[in-house]
Amino acid sequence: MTDLNAPEPHTAPALNTRPTLLAVFAHPDDEAFSVGGTLTHYARLGVNVVLACATRGEAGKITVPGMTVTDLGAQREQELIEACRALEIPAPVFLDYHDSGRYERTRHDDPLAMMNVNPLDVEVKLRALIERVQPQVMVTFDPHGGYGHVDHLQIHRAASAAFFSAGSLPYGGPKRLYFTAMSVESAAGIARMGQDLDPLVYGVSEETFAVRMDVSAYAGNKAAALAAHGTQMGEQSLLGRMTPEEREAMQERLGHENFSIGGTRTPIHQYPLRGLFDGLDGFGHLDS
Image (cartoon, rainbow, N blue to C red; front, side, top):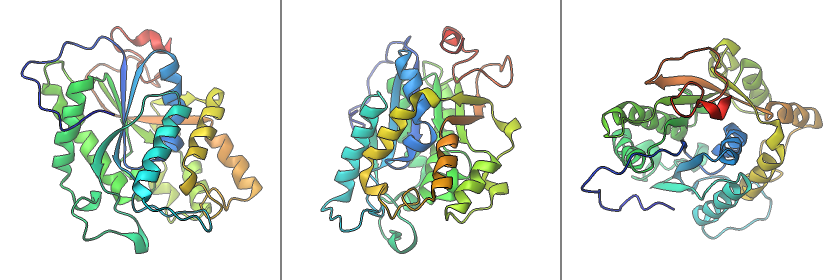
């Protein structure tokens, strides 16, 4: 794992010529649902995949009846490391903030909870990471944070801001920013499983998809990554409570991962794009 507290270098790092993708999310397990197959796909193509996780999910809900965990943050850190192994990507970078929780678990008084942290501080930390790993592509949550969790909204704001401010870095900053995107139909499916959301607000039209990744070939990786998050995937979780019909529909949705354009420093030569690196000088072959 990268040490984010290491002193800043006195000289600019050498220009990174290896294709690099930086994915920025809030909690362990966020990566498996939204981008897991995409991360595996690019890792197999030789892309340096860097996953930054803002928190260790300390305020998550244990969904396995009778399970006792002494330190949930430490447990979920290990779960994410195992999930990364399943996705064939390196161990994650943690930004060392705290999970804000939800409902009765909301941590109003925790100064390190994402809901209480200045997004500009998170942006500064992400800019340092961007300078260090020099990604050409960034991925984070959409403006609604997937299903509206406050930590998702905070990391969306900070990661988006870091993309734009990173343009002044010596290497020129990442060339593309993508947001995870789900269709209205997928949002309706999540609503039927118990999430309180309006599909017409949280979902987007398919014309919004700039990239539609077929990740059905990585279904095994995604399933193993989800299973690695054992505290969150028990029988009391949304997935655990699904009917067979809902589970079948979910499996179909997990076969595709969709992205909208959040920002670009290069022309968009066609729409939709064939992949996240499509059209980037020196890297377009990854999506040929």
